Image (cartoon, rainbow, N blue to C red; front, side):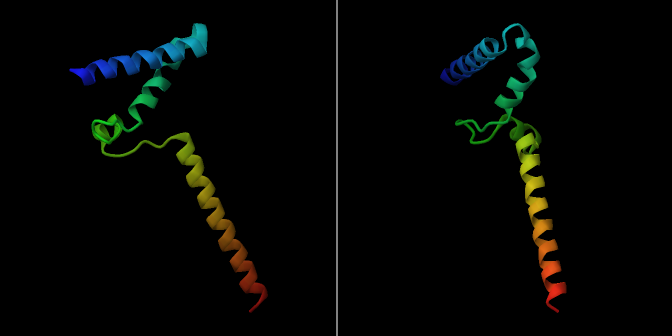
Length: 89
């Protein structure tokens, strides 16, 4: 049952940090703390609880921004190449 004790300790630490950082509004931050916990790989399984439950990784704001930036960079490069070839044909 050591893993259950570790889990309880980890969640307790997360809640303490949330309360310390958010003060009186700590209860509004619980969904974010839960998402953080559910979206990180755990040493026992090597996977996040979210992935084990739903068989995919959730889209986080960082991932959406990264995908958007990659897509924009690709479109910009394509546009630059199109302009280059149209000027040099």
